[in-house]
Image (tube, rainbow, N blue to C red; front, side, top):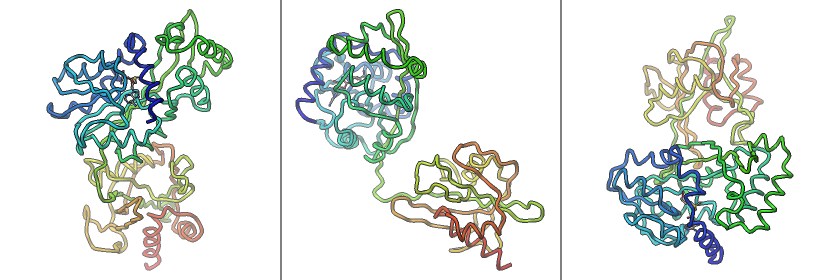
Amino acid sequence: MKNEDLKKIQSQFNKRARNYKEYTLWIENDEIYKKCTEPLNSFVKSIECLDLGGGTGWLAAKEKNKSGRNWTVLDISDEMGAKVPKAIKFVKGDFHETPFEDNKFGFIIALSTFQYSNNLNSALKELKRILLPEGQVVIAQKFDDNYGSNKKIFKTLTTLRNPLKKQIGSSLKFKDSLKKNGLKILKQYNIKHNYKYPLDKWLSRSGTIPIQRQKEILSYLKVIPEEIKEKLNIQINDGQISYDICWGIFVCAKNIYKYPSIAIVATLIVERTINQEKYILLQKRQSLYEEPEYHDQWELPQGKLERNENIRDTAVRELFEETGLTLKYFREGEKSNNISSIKIFGVTPYFITHLEGKHNFLSIAFIVDAEGELEPQILNTKPEWISISKLKAILKSEKVFPLNSEVLQKYVDEHEER
Ligand SMILES: C[S@@+](CC[C@H](N)C(=O)[O-])C[C@H]1O[C@@H](n2cnc3c(N)ncnc32)[C@H](O)[C@@H]1O
């Protein structure tokens, strides 16, 4: 990070250190503290913990009081550092380039600090470097998630109040940065809080907002139409200002796998006889799907094996989530197998691999019976019963999800052979 930018941040926080606690509403919030320190509940006491951009070290001190763990606070501001309790080690430094050796910390918390980074990728890489391979990190930030189509208002207000803050944007965008920098997201919490401040205090923020800019902020607040203020829950009355803040809290681990991982997918061919004709369940990918390249493709109900699930659990869960149906039993196909005669739960499923490098899948496709009416639990799927003749037509002339085209063709071929 450029020296002069860092100096400006340092000097702002040297001023803000005087009455930092008074202005920082999340210090009093137990929910934020609990979610930020939750992973420690399952960690041994001996790990080293780091509060990155930890300011006055209030979080480190609170946790140390409870657990007796070793905590270090790293921050660029000497005055914030001067407030760190003696029992906690304070290191002055830049979170883009810390003085710590590789793999030093078992737990790192970065709470409301990366908005001061002008190079988020390098800050995240550094964080990953100093984290133990089996360690965990929590990153908590305020995001513009609740501003919808009014993100410009969020941006203008934030920049007017603090031009040193970089725009972090939405939690969705942030998630991509985490993944891109080799951090695996274990848990994500999105929390909305309403913050209320005396207007004069909010406007001056420990004397770090010049009078001229305070006037600009007031004028800007006046031109935001009332209905938008109402929508965003910005209220100004009786000398107070209040508004909603969206926090995103990410619990992450270091992605230590050197080789591409393979997802095991339970894929389901749900058969049903309707008016003496055989149908199977297909669904069309809706435009809500994140990956636009798959929009409008037909696919089978399916999903990835999650931690602590066996393939039957996955099949039951995914089928219910995507279609509302309850899986009853696995069925033996006509002569279904392609690469082996391995039996799972007494039947021979189809095995399909799809190894592209970026997304590697092994799909285990079962023919199943299920009960109930179609009623998807999630928004982005639209299941539909498809006759075998329509399935043939779909395979010929419509788009089919790559992982499923081969298994569907095999299924159709086996029907023809009868
Ligand atoms: C909003 S405060 C948050 C402090 C603390 N995490 C908390 O929750 O109260 C942001 C902190 O980040 C620190 N900071 C900003 N940029 C930094 C950098 N490049 N390296 C280290 N600390 C930085 C500031 O000095 C400040 O103490």
